[in-house]
Length: 216
Length: 217
Image (tube, rainbow over all chains, first blue to last red):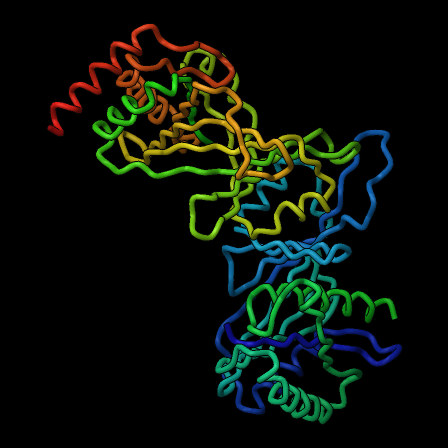
């Protein structure tokens, strides 16, 4: 499948996050010729082990993330970061986990926004909000280059795109910038040919970055 | 949900059962070779102790994995009266690292089996699956090539059909009626209710084999 890079919004130190940044980012995509092509939503769920009454909570190294990608709705990706395990399954695994009553979905985060077509690129700009509230937790984007599936072969082109994109956004004088953090795909046994599993790993990385950005 | 009944048959009568099933279903049999790993939650993990089964289909050119949770049986006066067990079952196809995943979550291997046999999948009032398998145990961990029968000379017959809350009565009827066709060879009942082998099996098997011989000659 086409190679994809995830970028997250890194606010300047002390700057606050606002939905205005999302509006401006969308305006930027449109200003360089992006044509709006619908909405998208990816869901990320934090699972934590449940302990029996009176027992101490099992180790948090067993926390895992569940990712449901907008472009693979029938699939579910479970990521155990501490163990570098990525399990691909049908989305019915969520029902299995519910029946087992050993792990509980603690927080559900929705990544949602607009999708744009820009030549050979597909761009998605979105906000990250918890399912139970409207509190903005972050802003991110997906940059997908449709003609290529090799991560290495597309690297230079993607870097150039990100550079141009960062320049475009900088003209708006917003309090921060978009940043791409490389995920270590080989840790999860993933190769150069891009798959939806790579996207799931990128969401886990992006999530960490968003949490870190909010803490700072 | 699924409706399920089970029974046992002596291996010497399996050929006759296969002929009967072939005639009733009109579809070719499928070979089964399933490595089943039963995992249980470790101490303190979960609100209640839990159990999950990982099934590896070894009959495929590339083995495929499924995780399966079998829930409790439907209860109540109505459920007592029917001869078929209705229970919740949830399954999901998973990648091959599923065992590592569940170990990391805190599950432990309780036991493993290799089920070898065949199945028939067909529609008769409801989509029905009949499996005939011998259960085999491994002398060493995961050594499926060295598996030996748990109950030599006896095989398990299981009939299952997917069901939903609004149609399980119809599915129960479909499964019950199908069981009647197999009655001369084996008795089928709810899992856990042992009914043993049927006395008419030898005679019925002999009749089936001789009829089959006449047809093919």
